[in-house]
Amino acid sequence: MAERVYVLVWDTVTGRIERTVSTTTEEAALQAQAGEAILTQADAPDPDVEATFYVQPDPPTLVLRPTSPMSINKTAIKVGGVPPNGVATISNIPVDTVLAVRITTPTSTSTLPDQTITDGTVAYTTDIVGTHRLTLTRWPYRDMAYTLTATLP
Figure 1 (cartoon, rainbow, N blue to C red):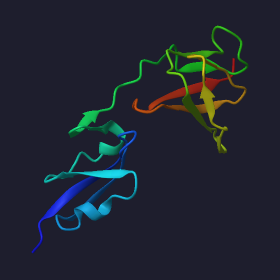
Figure 2 (figure 1 turned 90 degrees about the horizontal axis):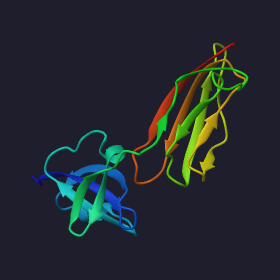
Figure 3 (figure 1 turned 90 degrees about the vertical axis):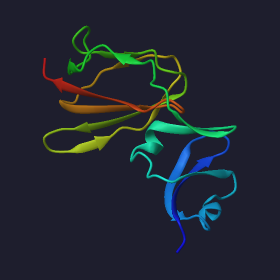
């Protein structure tokens, strides 16, 4: 009977772990496609391995993705965008970070178009009462997510 191993398939340019596969030692090398490589492990990887690690190539080594330096100044704002209570500021955002916003109200959920941050700061305002989930993504940093509560003034 063939030995089972865990294979981390990773992008050879970015080090991003694309997928994790449980396979046999004989089939392990077949898991990678063009532009990918494999890192084989005997033990099951962390369930969040794709979100929290990447692979440094020489020699292939699992490395913890760094935490982004960004921070937010508040998690509750008033609708209308009037400073200081109507604006939440996220600062120290790495260039080319993508901001995704999901808004949940008592009657609906909506998603705003993604926005690429180029100047390091977001001053978030809204006219919608509800819960606003702001997720910021920039490789190789770990994704950061903030939950804001927007209420009437």
